[in-house]
Length: 219
Image 1 (cartoon, rainbow, N blue to C red):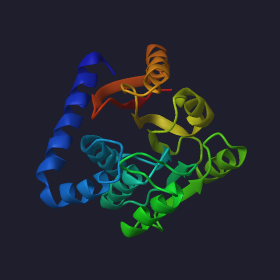
Image 2: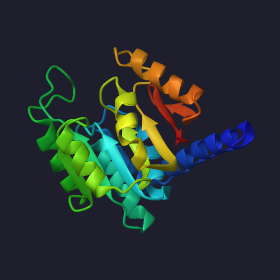
Image 3: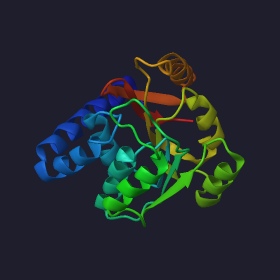
């Protein structure tokens, strides 16, 4: 893809975002998920859109309370095609925060069920780099089957890309949070994403919300 095509695709994403904003019933549904999200509303809208248009399955690492999981599930459901969705979350508790919770995974499960997606999403309670989790994901997805990858975990996105890269389809949509951030995750995340971009493995298409990177996998 040349720079002109890349720019055209980036502008198309912006257009799709505006269209969903004007779709009041749909935007209202996504806004409900935004109530328990650390991602911005615009990022959730793009997750919905990418889940709707992607070919193949969806792999998410770092579901937290499930806002992005719900947005992806809604998009997949709106596509009218059956899409396998796996979301990985280690769980635990979060204190002293506006989204504080005693049990992250329990609340994640509740939010997914409340959206009517309990049978559409496979939730894995564990870390993305645990041997059992890796084996489960690779048993569910064939090589090249993942058309959309969402990462919102720690500061080591390269670790998980290297782990699951054989599952990514050519042109797999990617959303990577904390490329720009006030947290300590931003520096390592940006360095790893920039390195993969310089190597021609990632194609950037924009930054949304408070610093979420959006693009495609070239592999």
